[in-house]
Image 1 (tube, helix red, strand yellow):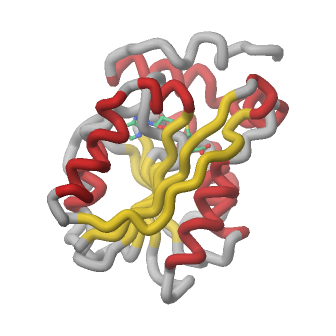
Image 2 (tube, rainbow, N blue to C red):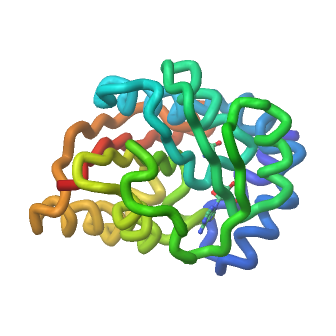
Amino acid sequence: MGKGFLDKVYSARDAEGTRRLYDAWAETYEAEISENGYATPGRCAAALAAHMTELSAPVLDFGCGTGLSGLALKLAGLTTIDGVDLSADMLKRAEAKGIYRALRQVEAGAPLGHAPGTYAAIAAIGVIGAGAAPVSVFDLLMEGLAPGGLVVLSFNDHALEDPANEGKLDDWTGSGRAILRAREYGPHLPGIGLNSNVYVLEKT
Ligand SMILES: C[S@@+](CC[C@H](N)C(=O)[O-])C[C@H]1O[C@@H](n2cnc3c(N)ncnc32)[C@H](O)[C@@H]1O
């Protein structure tokens, strides 16, 4: 297995290329990232759970992949989790975990299609940055929340190298449209020496 996909995932590609990459990676994704100690889902889930007032409130796992992020949310005590993703093959594996209330395939950049407030929180764990979704999806996530709603997300070291990514969060907090509730730097994929920042923001 080695660095099967990890050695190519962090290059820039368009949405169709991203979908194809994750369809192709679906079968070996969990083995490859688990063997590298994938730590960000557990860190994000703990950070979100610490800021939720009601753990049974619905949470959307955006870019849920094979469901490792949903599993981490569940293990942190969250009980009502829906998932969406670009890749049908990743979603099939998420479905097999039996932890999601509902799963749906989405088009890149399309509005999420739920009324604001449907979800108390939205997670984008390992989803924004080179190799996955552009930071413009952060606007979609925030538009899908009502005031008081939370978003938990991560930027790995590659994503942190691009100032546009944290800049997007700064735009929201600087304009008073969101409050930064938590930011913590720590391990992402220790097996390849990669760290990440985990953030919790609240929509105002
Ligand atoms: C690195 S995986 C992370 C999956 C999961 N959250 C986890 O922690 O294991 C990134 C996921 O984001 C999905 N993705 C990438 N771009 C997306 C987009 N624009 N909209 C929705 N999902 C997207 C990919 O299909 C892939 O499943």
